[in-house]
Image (cartoon, rainbow, N blue to C red; front, side, top):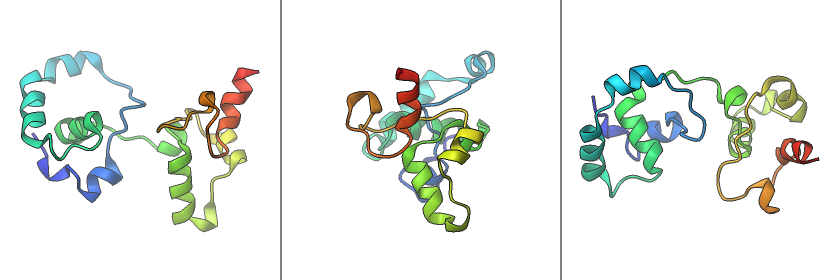
Length: 130
């Protein structure tokens, strides 16, 4: 079922499936994926799509996805900052990240390997680089 109300909505932003980190049941996906549904959706909403792949995946398959804790499996600098703004009494710091996070996601334009990264999570990349 297509969920067009998600495109550009607060729910799409808040609960969007981040396509940078995915674990997929490929056998089931191959059975359920309909290329024409994807093309129809893109053609109908192409002017509203902001994060193309994420918007399409969320709208067409969001109700079939199991979202996991981003703090553990998809932590980015941006999401850490959002969390800390909303939860000032239980802030995430580097010690927490080292103990609890499994995947650090360097999303956006600023990457630690480009030398223009702003934030503290680049320490994990630097550690691997050494």
